[in-house]
Length: 516
Image 1 (tube, helix red, strand yellow):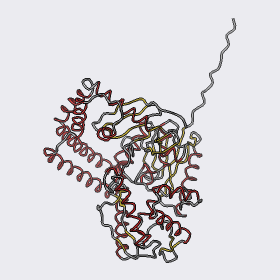
Image 2 (spheres, rainbow, N blue to C red; image 1 turned 120 degrees about the vertical axis):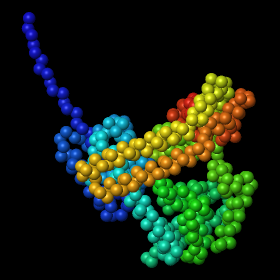
Image 3 (tube, rainbow, N blue to C red; image 1 turned 90 degrees about the vertical axis):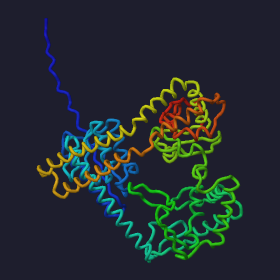
Image 4 (cartoon, rainbow, N blue to C red; image 1 turned 30 degrees about the vertical axis):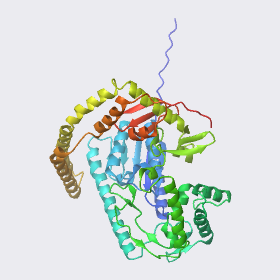
């Protein structure tokens, strides 16, 4: 008998997949050079480690660091981490990664849930360390405070320039450009298009038809695209075409979210600021025509029907990318499709769904609620009542727990200060922030006795009141949809989830017609 020994072969060691994230907040040439330098730096750093392999250099150019959801590079990085293609992330500093404390901590915690640590080069912080999160919270808080301070200074400076008549907007509207002195100057060929738009409205042509006419003529928008109803309405509602300027039409709140100004902040207006393209009479007449059309359709400017002409508007959310759906009129009828898919089919694969499919699914879901109210909705309502009666107590306990956690953080802060990890300034700032948070918690504890709780309970009561007396629905009812549904989550072209205002999310199959 012959015995043959097969020697063990050492398994090839898997390389550590390392990615880097870079960001610059403006798009000038100096910042472009800075971005290229950052990318080259991390590519070289990864090459220096033989056990590493580059999993990608992700970057955002000319994008603010206060909002994570608008940074495509960051979102691409997070996606690669979610599907397990990255083991470790490098970035320059906390402020480069995020200037928003909440976003920063949420992103870091999400990465850690995938077992992906991130290394902040400037601060020498590795999120794989247990005590890093407190330091990270401090540093990201300081970065956010810096952004808020810069934002306030910029706003103050802009307000002063507005009052002095020296403020200049970032871009000139269609029909204008800026001359060498920073003043509005008319572009003749674009001004002709602006006049055509106003004259067409006055003559009775619809906004949608105006856009089609411009497309047929081969006229492009400033960005080289086609003319949408929104683009044309933006021109019709722009006071700059009569030579006036109104400032602060939109504003940014303390969370760096932009809103339309409805009287929330001052909105200075300067008459006869520059040369007009449209006469005031033409502008007024065009708006009278538009107002008359709205009145004929029973729409007022500030009511919900005006803001959302269709019941599904802004309520259908893509389960793949999180973008809302847009209404489309196609050869086979009215459909809704993910906006990201419309813009770029490769970025999201969610195709259109016919409106009737959503309507039918809602009707089916409502009928199921009617049939199963005793075994589903009624027990849910009773559970909410029990929870609602104790809601204030639960909130008070949560606030007290938060105060206790802050006490523990104070102790950790002292340890970090003794070790020299943080300096005296940072130590004092974080202590003040914790005390401010504690004071707010104490005030809320005192006021909780006066708070009327149970929004979900009231919505459930409203739904249950309808369900208890409702007959089986044989057709879609838009009023019921508006009353009870908060949003629709599209999981696929075969199933959706109706997120109800009462807090329930009910999954329902779609009967889709996939003809393209």
